[in-house]
Image (cartoon, one colour):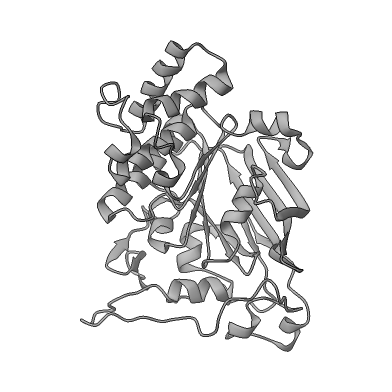
Amino acid sequence: MSFDRGVISVSCGLRTWSRAELGGCHCYPRRMAADTVLAIEGLALDARIRRTTAQPVADAHVEVRAGEIVGLVGESGSGKTLTALSALRLLPDNIEIAAGRIEVGGQDVRALDEAGLAALRGSVVGMVFQDPIGSLNPSMTIGRQVAEVVRIHQHVERAAADARAVEALGLVGFPQARERFDAYPHQLSGGLRQRVMIAMAIANEPRLVIADEPTTALDVTVQAQILELLQSLVAELGIGVLLITHDLGVIANAADRVTVMYGGRTVEQCSTLEAFRDMRHPYTEALVASAPTLEGSEELVLRGIPGTPPDPTRPEPGCPFAPRCTRGLSDCVSAPPAFTAIGEGRALACINPVPAGARV
């Protein structure tokens, strides 16, 4: 990861992102709104694993407002997907919500009964899962699958649902939507299957879309198309998007703000530009520094983060990043730091943060 202070650009791998691409200034005008469509505060999850109990998420904080894309980033196992699934209460049977507040579109998700959850899922919140080929029904045509979402939530006749499905497929850039309405998932490319998933997510005009690794296993050209599609939908529909990824390039290209998780805890919230140029948490700094870069040489430079992520079945009393942190203090191993606001739109969980204005 390198930074050009003159033009304020960020280079990650073989791609450079300018100021216009970082911090939400995309090619689509953003309709930023004050209303919050997702608010998660102090979320903790307990998981029953054989004869023991683990806490894969201990203190998660996420906020998404209408008209923006918030990137949820962190290493594998940091709790990103479980945190997002909690917003829909779609957790595995062995995991339960132990603490915290979850509000979606102003509704208290923890207080909803099954009927309330059914009305929430697919209507107020749309979900784009990681693996479209595993999520789509192989025995149903893609048009019928999109139309089914409409019929369940809007209680309309089949013809009206089919028309809305064609409209949703067209909105996500699916070519010849009407002619290919009866195609099956196996007949489509990975990029087109992902467009079908996004069409299902937006068919009922939700206020929030959760996209879990939507660019995984796609080539870079298709990745760029999917990210551009999400940006255009936010601009046109005014929805909020929670974009889950471990790819910093995806964050740099698409997100307005960033939430960083480590060891089941939210460690930093900030704008995308701040995450790359003025990060305050040592883990965010290490994560950005670990992105591959050529740095002016012909050899690829890789910087890993020494150590391993924490084991949720063996929690330590202090900060989960303390064993790997270069700025650790003696107090870091005694108790986890509180997640605290440090400025407008910024929050942090660290007692010895990176100095303001520092650069990687």
